[in-house]
Length: 312
Image (tube, rainbow, N blue to C red; front, side, top):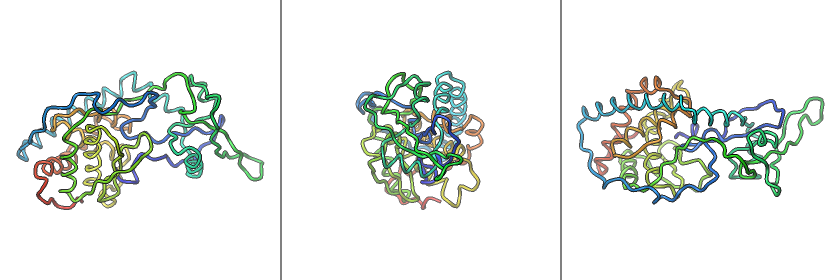
């Protein structure tokens, strides 16, 4: 996704009682905390051998229309589910941090994902580990000079206890389609590079370049490339206008959903869109833009050696 919309920290300040709480803004494809390691890429069966799509423009448009309608229904189903509501309730316990405190946390624990005060963790059924070293941040304090105090907080990795409710957005299993989508990106004039990222961040785009986390399962890599290509096509600085975060992420993952469906692959788009504030109605309103992005990606996938117009 464009850098401005990638899953980094929310920039905000708060008033604190138990010390501020800190989440990363909902991570791409994996907002919840997973205490167990992600299953290896070969833990799910591979899809059938890759096949050519070879569809007319009219067929692509009809397919996208039908798929978007189905996606809108699935998003609303996810938002009504008890598991999704529980995950939202858990994440509401974590507040956003000021940029300065984000920097302090990164300096002390670069892989931090969910940070909160000791009492907040206890309310969530978790306790800090005996050897946990507090992360020190600052909180405003009236009638003091300087007007702030040091506050100890802890990352989820420094706690143990009840598992936090989460929404599973990880795609597992290999896929040959990921390589084809990388070739499609090149056809569209978009470079694909790798980075060693923090947990939860699958990828982001910076205008002409998509950055992917290393060591992703093939299916997750395919979905992430399709998502970021949609951002490259639809959400440049000139074209995003007054679009909201929910609208931008809805359009990108709806496009990814269409591409993955066309390639015979599963998608976690309904949960991703719901988590980022989207809805079935918003999916339907995005139909024409999603059609445009999906068509360009699928045509580039079919004709990777043909130079497509630069994304705009």
